[in-house]
Image 1: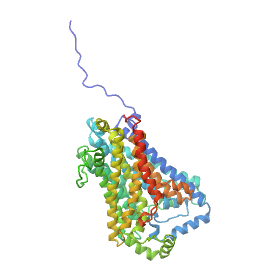
Image 2: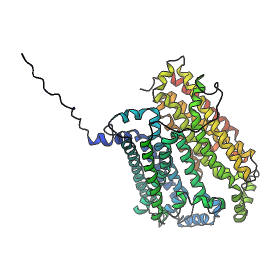
Image 3: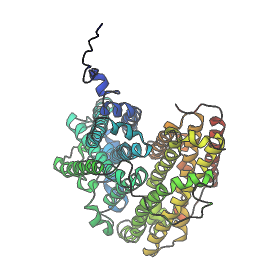
Image 4: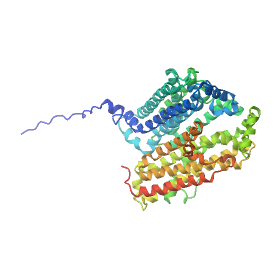
Length: 564
């Protein structure tokens, strides 16, 4: 009997993948990235849409007559440049679109930019550190293709969000317009959304380039500092001579005359922003192609005693993991604070020249508030955005702690004599220590800048620790949420709380919402720390949230399963 052996097929036929799987699913790197980022895309899109419609309705209701619009325009145009500052150039403020552009336009760019920075910093660097890219790279995909498809996914998500923003602007003008000129044409809505998207992408491109070089945490810190610093410098370039030269390097300054919602267009100014973003994206792809996966250049730090850093205790290990990130955030925020503090003398001189009456009014209402020195200028310019940056730093620390579980490393840690509760508490304490290290760095930078400006240094130095209080509370929120539910979205919850706090603190007074709404913002309970006015209730509240979050997370961690 003979048996004839057939030739086995050289390769098994490849399964056909549906278009849906390729675009949204596991059929491609692009589709998987779109799927993984769906929650962030929905959150940001919903946030900006709600802000456009909510603020549009509130503004139209508050200024619903031509007389009210004229008074509003007169008030905006009468403000000296040194006081207008970050609000920018008031153009057609008497219309719904003009007021919206002047008052809230930059807020949308900042929210979108923060999303882009967080997303693009972790797209390659974060996944490489966790080891998830190793499996993808082992497949027949080159690293260049991996980077390009992941970048394309973020560009797609940003495009979707900006299209929704344009539609929301058009709808707000059509639905809430009460006087002549309130309608927002499609060209204006598209021009505004295009500006927001480009500002976001060029800010994110910095994190995209730095991520493969220095890691996710450092990339976020430096990119956020450059973005916020550029916004501050551009806003005060006309009134603070020290900012004039630096402002020419910022994309906020390049596009300062592009105010489409106010009927003023400068399309050419968007071209260099797009060019810079494209160049940095290509550079990031090339750097990722040429470097080993996960290889980064960490920020060097002084050696610490083994008892405080290393593997001798869970707290030491947790803090050691956070140190490079804490140093990066401290340097980034410190650079921002140093520039603002050092420019306070120029600001004070211009304020005396342009608005001496305003100084008298401020001193009458707040006798201890001297807006012409470093502390007053920092309170006016630095603190509000400092809270946002410190909050996102806390989200980064929470994400670093959460990576123990999301990467599967916790199973190895729990194989030692380490309980779940002890692991969570050590991670929370390590994040608290990281907040402290970050704060010391940027507080020293702020004090140094204040000293160069000839102002008192102790009060701004101590006032900088108000940012630490807010960051500690946000760490408590993240650790509590991670312990109760899943650590995989703990950092996202912190980021969402930070953005919500910023919007409430910004919009509640401006839109004359009930006082209880404004009180929901944690930052509304911290007083004026840069000028030495503290609110004890806010201090207790922040510390209570921080400690309570760890205790709540400990209780929840002991009662749930680990992430699959």
